[in-house]
Image 1 (cartoon, rainbow, N blue to C red):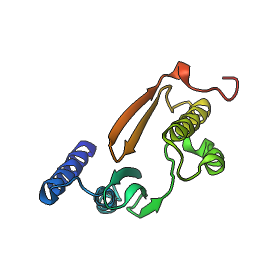
Image 2: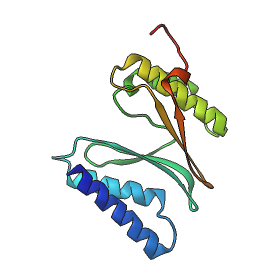
Image 3: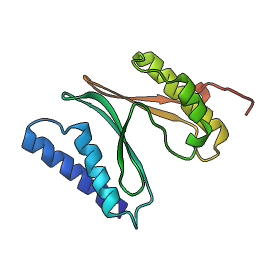
Image 4: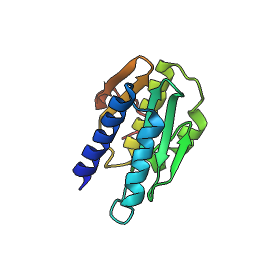
Length: 150
């Protein structure tokens, strides 16, 4: 079922891009996920974070909660390790960070979560989305910062 929904999502985004002759707006992608969550709320136990950049509104982040509520955010976190880092995110996030500041902020947040949560994994996969495109950054476990004895 999950694979089918993801395929349908990609198809809807692709169709919108062809119809509009431009990539879909970030809010459009988030809205497709909102509908998916709402119409499958009895079967789907997941929330989604949708982030991206478009020509209309620039950088954006949206959260789609269980049940399909769509909420714009400046910053958000999710996943099993997120409960350990709300204080860090609240204290350290600031708007208009540079690319390097964002990467360090995200790397630190993931390292803190992984240090406390035994199912968060050992490698940080970061995605930088800007006006010029998408960049995938991988931080191997041995390069992650350490904040306490592990």
